[in-house]
Length: 110
Image 1 (tube, helix red, strand yellow):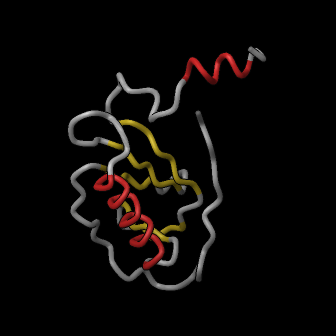
Image 2: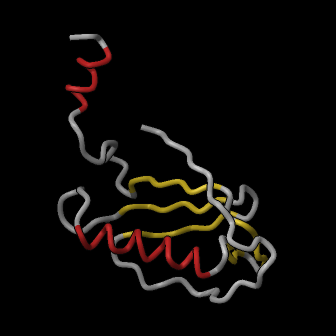
């Protein structure tokens, strides 16, 4: 499933407070100034699923972005994050839960 959501800015012209990234273990965050986006790659330990540890790191990522007023630092530039994209770091993982077969049957009305 592909989904997009809008990031609301608290203060779009406020100074960024922390240019360092928290030390994540199960996610990797990459900021792209050109597209004003933050890519979060999920790389959970063990089985590819949402765990409390993974969810905690996603929340920490959100708190870090919020503390910096919706802005990021990359390549010497401070810019607003307009898009957040979440993807698996494992190319073999394409689904993060759910029952694709059930969805397929629901789409077909069966």
